[in-house]
Length: 471
Ligand code: SAH
Ligand code: F3S
Image 1 (cartoon, rainbow, N blue to C red):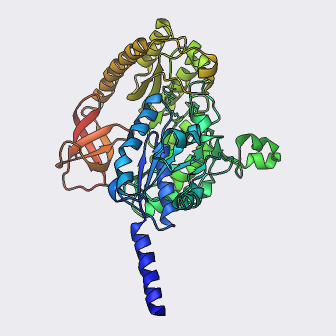
Image 2: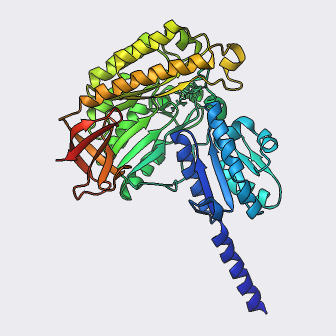
């Protein structure tokens, strides 16, 4: 009898572990994708294995984005698609992670009846407890933001990985308060991660075969480690401690030096915080990629002021000059918003003229989407019509295409070192990889393997892709 009970228990635990299947889907920025890997790691310890099939999952987590209204609509649509899964499996738990969870809090549970659990970006360690609550039939919420949480000690489970490139987060949150942006509200105060834990994560990645890391933060240039906590706390420390603080260029140098075979990228840089010493470090180390994503948003100083960007057109262009001086072949990209409050045709023309001066390799371009509770929503009028916003957006997209083509054509007949990341989307006989400048290159396989560094001569191009062959 006793044995039978034991046996039963064993079967139950086995079934439990078999049935703990997590389907996790991420929307939005790289930080969300990186956070999902932290979540998978936290839940792995609880016996969850990830699945790519939502139909066999008993836990579905959606890591959400609030940056534009459209991003939120996409998430809501996705939630309704899981209605059938819930009907088929009454034990299924659906959880909302990330920025929408933080923005909407308990309200989310009222608005989306299918959702059982709402958890903000700093509360993921609490997931096991919250899941337990939902298993007991209660709805669960934790949206507490933290001044400390960096998940430094968690070794992320790499999801959908190519085994070659990985994200490593170095800061969380943002203190910048751009007037259009919801991120400071959803991701909280800026805090930096302990450099030791960053170095050990990069080392571990390199040990298991990864060849490239991208250091992530909303504003990597303001990375500052002095023992943890919010940045303003630094001033409370004695002078000798302040002097020991590690800034972004120092961190970059430490990682580059200790991992000479690993390619290093980072994102995102902010114009007002990007100092020359970072540029000098990039120039000094072969393994730090010659590529900077430097969002400008608008080419008009008047609009930049309304956006509370902390930099003018002139300051931004002086940063571009500094980049070109220290890193002459640097890949450059930007983010743009068209139709922000009070944007006139003249302001729009200023954006186009700034683009003409810089000639970015590529850009992420959006029309303005008003976000609840931001400064712009509270104090400024969303007074450019949707039609004009979209027309201006199309104009900058067309201009960017021209510039991308000009930049790419300059690579023809040149040789680039490329890291092979995977099979080309169009043909299994071809690989794709990226240059140091972050441009995608497609070329025949030539007996090489994913993860190899190869020299590729560029023969032709489109505005999006370089086409070449291994030499
Ligand atoms: N510093 C961040 C920026 C995050 S938001 C980073 O790491 O990339 C990414 C981009 O979305 C911004 O640069 C901006 O161009 C755009 N964006 C942010 N809020 C927006 C809004 N309300 N409407 C339209 N685009 C927006
Ligand atoms: Fe948003 Fe500006 Fe920070 S765009 S993420 S508030 S730098």
